[in-house]
Length: 125
Image (cartoon, rainbow, N blue to C red):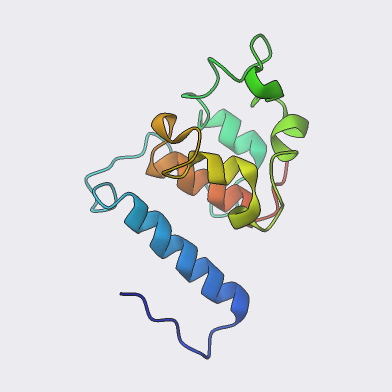
């Protein structure tokens, strides 16, 4: 059970809630048994996500040569268009990789967390 203090600011409550949900949507993967293939800075940029191959599971369908759904994850502009900077909870890109989302089968906790951090910090290039 998650209890949020009344003293927390509204945005901080959202952060805590979404971290809790993210961890509990992937309950078996956040017990330190899930090893991420990449390590990101605290405030990742799109360039860093590409450099660290965060989208490696996605590129076969969402690249320059094959942009399914008109989404090229190699293009900052097209990827950024699927986000609401600072608001992962309303961003199509983030919601699509969560359990129940259209792309959940291609995602994992590392990808979800990376996309969350990128959007939460403004979806910067």
